[in-house]
Image 1 (tube, rainbow, N blue to C red):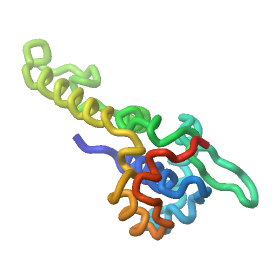
Image 2 (cartoon, rainbow, N blue to C red):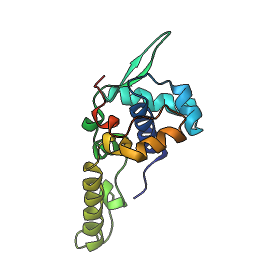
Image 3 (spheres, rainbow, N blue to C red):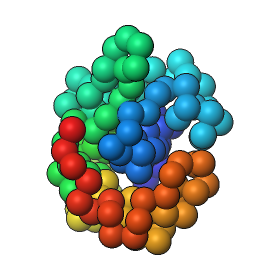
Image 4 (tube, one colour):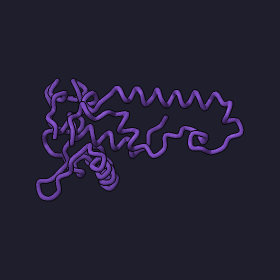
Length: 157
């Protein structure tokens, strides 16, 4: 299974904004921190706002904040909402294959995809930004370090 760059950027934005709470973040600073295009991030941020995962505040003093607590943002749900196509092989997308009906590969891949998503469903944004690892990620992104344990109880936006 390979996630698209779009989903990768989506998860990175959520991690950045989650670690930066309760302060607001900007697309420009997120782009700088990760070394990626602001135009790509603008599309990601727009969809995250439409999905109700972040709040965007326009104008001077505006920025991005989480729209819900990190513990309520499930990684598997984010992946399902941002991946355009989870069809691992053509027959998943309804395309004909000469062996579709008896094919065990199709069943195995379907089971593998389900397992992949089930594992991601066990993780929330809070898990991704928690503890010493969250402090280290904040340091690498040049963010003020949250105290260990602080990220689990970030206030909702």
